[in-house]
Length: 123
Image (cartoon, rainbow, N blue to C red; front, side, top):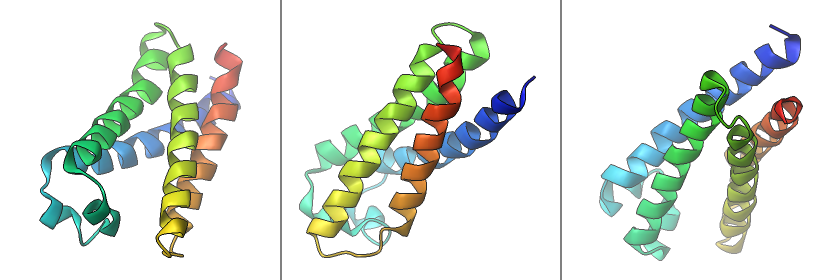
């Protein structure tokens, strides 16, 4: 197992854990229970919040399952690119709302971009 492979599993694994948790919360919790962590849910229809949660959950699975099974490993790269796009949108949303607390978004953006770079050798 090469260094890039080990680095991929560490970064992608942590990213997948985060998105499984965050996406799962968006899928099952009410707006009232999400509000303390995610103020933006007040401005977003709940079907859209639920859809984002499903996308995050599927993306997390996409980071892990394809390379693990060696079936369509390019899906891991697609999932990582999707998370880059998601965090670009999330950061823009926070800034538009006047919320300057974007450190988590930027951290996730960097982690997703690193995952894209680490997943590229599988293509």
